[in-house]
Amino acid sequence: MNDAGRQVDLLAESVDTAYHRLLGIEMPLPEGGYRGSYVEKIATTILERDSTKYVEMDIGERRATFRAAALNWILDEQKQILRRFGLVYDVWFSERELRETGILDSVLTRLSERGYVYNQDGAAWFTSTLFGDEKDRVLVTSDGQPTYFLTDIAYHENKFERGFEKVIDLWGPDHHGHIPRMNAAMEALGHDPGRLELQIVQQVNLIQGGEKAKMSKREGRLVSMEELIEEVGVDAARFFFLMRRTSAHLDFDLDLAKEQSDENPVYYVQYAHARICSILRHAEETGVRRRGLDRGALSRLTADEETALIRILLIYPEVIEKCAASRDPHGLTAYLQEVAAAFHPFYHRHRVVTEDAELTTARLVLVEAVRLVLSNGLSLLGISAPEQM
Image (tube, rainbow, N blue to C red; front, side, top):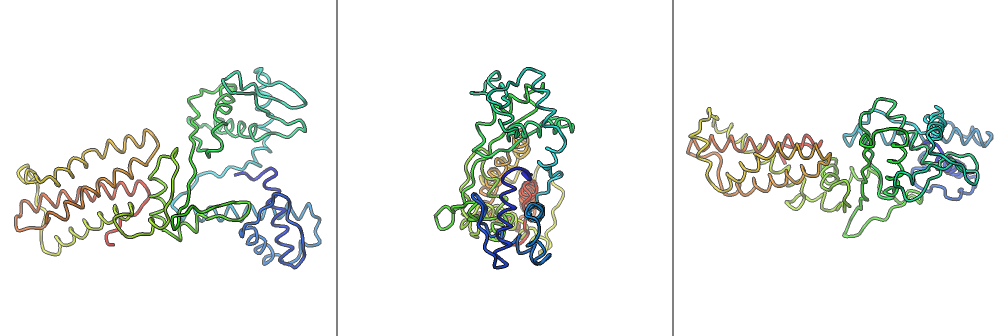
């Protein structure tokens, strides 16, 4: 949690401005301050809870109070939305608390003792060029302030101290150039470089009406996760986010995600599962019982659509292994679409419940196998497998 530094101070100052304006007291927004509607919501919450008690308070004390209130409000909002999305983090780690532990000084001392720090122009520099970086990096500025780089080094050092065997970071595309320096810092501290894996997560563009939504957190022009879930639902949001590699750009088509047609990939997969459930209900309602299978019954599955389904079902374990090894579930979303694409033509061309008891039994087993794979795959992705649509 980035709950320390100038950006958090700007947040507190922005809330302070909104609080006074709600009371009819004009106060200028700080340069670089935040204008989002969430800022006014935080100020409104404070005003409704504590009334005007902060107007006469010392400005430093008031802004410290507003800083804490804003951080708690935002964090609570994020946790609620993430729980709704089906995502729960075990630990929320505070940058402010990290700085208070003294680990920044400890890391700086260790790097200095190992000969990887020098002073120039009043600043402390890390010799990252010794490890292949394009230039050395500042750890402490000339006015004595730790840089974000030093804080990041200390955070990773803290993770290793907590017993992490493997640390996997997901960084935004604007941090690609930071990878060599972070790897250099871990190596300089004596850690096996293989214990840290840095992955770049590319930008997500929200598309509506064929146009890309323009967003700015500072200006308040943004689409929140809560709004996205309200718009398309949790299942579609999860499936669409998982359809691309983390390293690939994603154009999230809001209109497509809401569409109830074969063009919508999550609808296409879920509808295949619902159709199979309908077939199984029909079989039960008509008194058809699946008998014990023998090779004779299975050998009846000879149609092209049947063998195509069997072949694709057989590779499911391999798909899971590959996704697990690469830590990239987009292969599973693609696979489930392929299973659905194989099932739908089978459904349209072949009756499952027929007058032929042996063939009926074999086809019921086949569609149940398809249902199990679809259900299991969707479950792994945190997406529901509806029985009716």
